[in-house]
Image 1: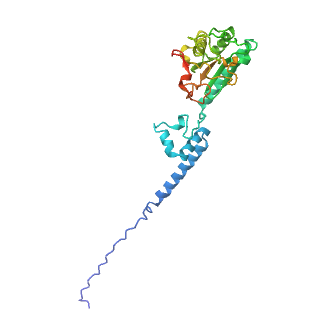
Image 2: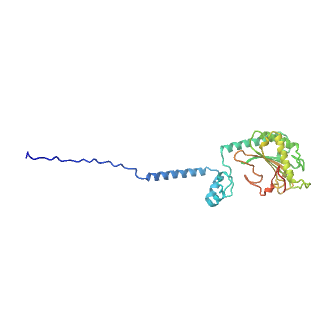
Image 3: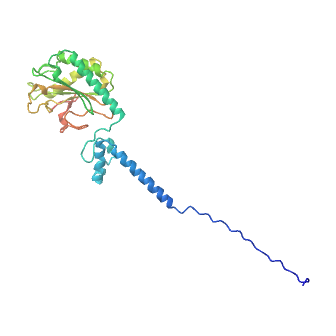
Length: 288
């Protein structure tokens, strides 16, 4: 037995490699994408809910008629800031801190004008001066009283003393403001006796007289954006075409926030007259 040769047994050890658990595929990406989409929808809803009513009308117009909406705004301008919607509604300006501050300045100017006119002591004149503030700006209207010669001599552009004193107050109140000013002239329906001089020329001349007086009293000439004459096309009292109150001059102080021009009296924001020939501007030929 001792002479037998023993062959050693060979043992092979193969270590096992640990398998990693992996990243569970791409299922987490789907869940994350759903979460992001839900959050985006939530913030969209919150954004729309907080919008101004006019902007909501624009959004509603898109969903009611997407094709017509795209055709209406094919130029690429966003209707959110164009002031009109596919639903034929005019959205009100979106409230911003700048607009709120501008509105406050206009209200203060209006109050200053009212108080200044009261201190003039012009009996009966205060009732013929209307001062109002809208989203578009400040409007000061000076209409003739029952006597018919409160601000201008009858049938002419010669100013009366009351107009001089009122415009001095207006020029002083508007002197430090950067807003542009539009001046409008109106007459009644009584025909002018001269063939070569009509209510068109008279309305423009009265508006231009008011412009000159404002500039002479301190209003920067560069602030005057436009002078308009409407003759008897925009009567204050349509049922009484010869009422002296139809003869008036209107000053419009446009808001300095997103308001490139003043709206024409009797129209909505940024509207146009039904007939372009209705407005006659100083420096352009007048005519019906």
